[in-house]
Image (cartoon, rainbow, N blue to C red):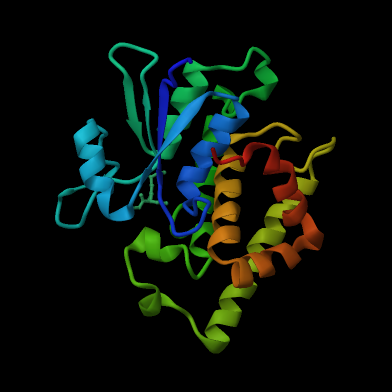
Length: 237
Ligand SMILES: N[C@@H](CCC(=O)N[C@@H](CS)C(=O)NCC(=O)O)C(=O)O
């Protein structure tokens, strides 16, 4: 039996599916590229020790100056020495560089799209962007307890209205593209889809009764169609 050379590190949850937007982002890419990989599931409390033991670099610094370790991470043993990476965007760029699709129109992040993708990332993926939308997601980004940040009553309603407007704006921008397909560039996956798709998958599994219920009722069903288009690449082995 062939040895699986790519090890993908994802966060173990109590659910049978991952709920991290950033790990989903990379999983979507691995699946889209049809790469063979094995998931190493890591408990949240073990991320630092596992990363350190495997030589995976930290992705940022904590306020006290100590290194912060996060997932996703990936080890590719196809090469000697193996490629050892952390941080979703560098991992996706590595996969793109190392395993390009022979059909260049299937590229996830073509070099010409880098600047646009960086802007998208800034407005959508970072803690101040749409990613701060779900009342559940910020606890991961900001390291705060849910009960300390949870909005209530009118504030919560207003927050959801703001998010709905942001999603409507995205849906309107996506309608401006002619041609078939529900994704940002049509039917193929782009980095923007990995980012937004990762966020929506996390919302759907993490908050099915509130966040996903709301999002799926917005923008004339756009986000239901969007998720259906992504479903080809959401398998979790
Ligand atoms: N910039 C990193 C951020 C990754 C990140 O924040 N991962 C979260 C899960 S979505 C994590 O590992 N959190 C663990 C922790 O904060 O202890 C990326 O894009 O991969």
